[in-house]
Each structure stands twice: as C-alpha cells, then as structure tokens.
Amino acid sequence: MTEDKNNLLLNISALYRNVNKYFDRHLTDYDIGSGQMLSLIIINEHEGLTAQQLATYAELDKGTTTKTIQKLLECGYIEVVNDQQDKRIKHLYTTSTSREIINNLYKIRNECTNQLLKDVREESEDLLDQLTANSRSFAVDDSYQHLKIAGLQKLTLLDYPGKVGCTVFTASCNLKCPFCHNKDLVFIPEGYPFYDPDEVLEFLQKRTSLLDGVCITGGEPLLQPGIFDFIDKIKSMGYLVKLDTNGSLPQQLKKAVESGNVDYVAMDIKNTWDKYSLTAGVAISDSQLKNYRKSIDFLKKSGIDYEFRTTVVKDFHTADDLKQIAKMIRGSKYFLQTFRNSGNLINPNVTGYSQQEMEEIVREVQTVNATTYLR
Ligand code: SF4
Image (cartoon, rainbow, N blue to C red; front, side, top):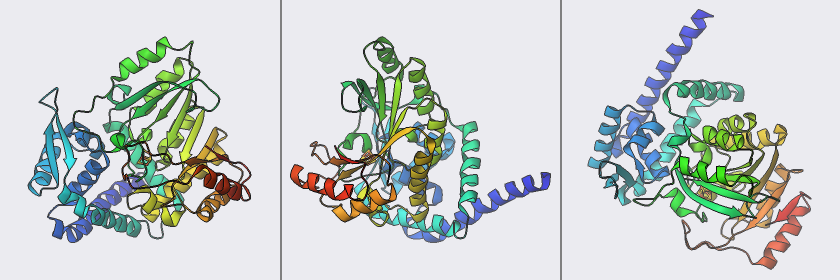
C-alpha cells in the first residue's frame, strides 16, 4: 500500500514534467510556456479578473503570478487596467492579439488532454478528478466572502418554477455562447460593481417571510469555490435553492447536490455533441464533452428535481438537433427556451425562431420526448 502511494506521487511528478515537455514543443510559435498558456485561457474565460483571482484560479503563488502577468504583457496578450475605486487592484483583460491565437491554444490544450486520456477508463478519470479536488481543498479559500456576485434580482416569479423567488447572478463563465444574454457576466467590464456577499445574505435574511426560494445563476456558479458555503448559508435561512449550471463541472455539481442544500437544478444542454463547441463559443474537447454527459447522467439518477433546457437559436439549432437531444434525455423535463435579444449579447447577430416556429418545433420534439415544453 505504501509503495502504491509512493508510486502515485512519482506518477504525478512524471505526468507534470511530460505534459510540460509537450507544451514546450507546441507553444514555441507563441513565445509562452504551459503555465502562461493556461493563465491566458483563464483570463479569457474570466475577463476583468484581478491578479489575486488569477492566482486562485490557476493555483499559483504570488511570485509566479507576477511573472506570468509580466510575460503575457510583454507578448501583448493581455492588458492591465487599474481599478477605478482602488488603484492597488489591477484587472486583466485579453487583447486583440490574444484573441487571434486563443482558439489555437485551446486546440493545443485539448489535443494534449485527448492524448493523455487515450485508453483511460472513465472510472480512472473520476479518480484523477477526485485526487485533484482533494488537493485543491488545501489550497483554495472556499469561503462565501470570496464569491463574485455580479447581480441580484430581488423578485422573480419566473426563475424558480412555481415559486416566488429572487435570483443571484455570479460572475464569470467558462463558455462563451454567442447568444448569451448576460455578456457582462462573461466578459466582465472594467470597474464592475460587484455585490458584497454579506450584504446579499443580509438582504435574504430580511426577506425570508416574503420569498420561497433563491435561484443561483450565472455565469457559471459552480466555477467559484465559495459557492458551496454561500448556498449553505442561504439554505440555513430556510430557502429553497435552485441552481442553474451549464453542466461542465460534474464533480462540483455532485458536491452541490449531495450537500442536500440544493432543491432544484436546471442544466443547459447547448446542442448535439457535434455542434457543442460551435454553440458554446469555445473549443470543447472530447474529454470535456464527457463531463457534460456525466452531469446529465448524474442528474437523471440523483433523485433531485431537475430540468434540462436549450435556448433555441436559428443559427445553431434545427428541429432534428433538438429531437436528438430529446431522445438522449427521454423521460426528463426538457424546456426549449425561445431566444430573445436582450441587447447585451456576446454576438449581436444571432437570431431566434418566431413564436409560431417555436410551437411547431416543440410539437415535433414532443414526438420523441413527451415531457418537452416551450418556455
Ligand atoms: S449562456 Fe450561460 S453558459 Fe453560455 S456563456 Fe452565457 S452564462 Fe455562460
């Protein structure tokens, strides 16, 4: 047993060194190393984050974070903007130069992941995820006070099915869906006025007699380590909790559901697997696709009340695509959401179907999954 444990640590060390060699070979044209590439991807997925937040997400120490930022600045891949209120805080943004190469970096990263996972059984992937999650618990501050809350809708009759609720919007997302109507939660503008989590909790404490439930949406709420502590605090006030997720983080989803603090989960299914990258706006590797499948399978077996949903966009979805999805989740509640232009889209040119077209699509999809509804 002891020898196995020692081998585990040796294997982790070899894995780290070999992966670095792979990236050294493939990143020469871009003048950055693997750590800088991963940090650039994190900045791309959390535009406007601070150096401190980059250190947390990338799990880097202060010195390495400073050097990484310096190198990315020298290459012209990021720009640093001083916080308007507190000049000591700096926000990091990608530049047009990095946007030209970012898809190539995703491809390099995804090819590496695919090669690493070749012939690896799914249970082994789960084991690696679990080991990494365990190791993270030593390093990341998962207190609710570090949660980035970008919005609070104080009253909603729509977001929590059948309940009077309010909605908390967390910042940052790992996807960039072109039809996303919350662009500011994905590409966070300079000087964004985040909410103080304590003030949000105070507000919720005062409304316990008026509201039934709290919807936690994003962005992608499960990206933030403090979300579990935050949900715990809300649940202890007696609220029902609904969690919206894009399904990319099955381990975190499992953790949230198994905590017993979540009452309802709404998970997006962006499109058929072959159109997932196109619809999510970022390159998604085969191994990442497995994560979405795992989230779907988990919810179906979890016993929690849940729904799947797809925002239907003319540019990405045909009725056949939606039937394919409906077949995969047959028997589960499936909501087809009419795309509406909020005026704050990631890609302002995407278009939706008319009400009549949506009704026809829903009728067609119901032939495959009777529990499909129009929203
Ligand atoms: S639609 Fe949802 S998953 Fe897609 S980018 Fe927006 S917040 Fe992220």
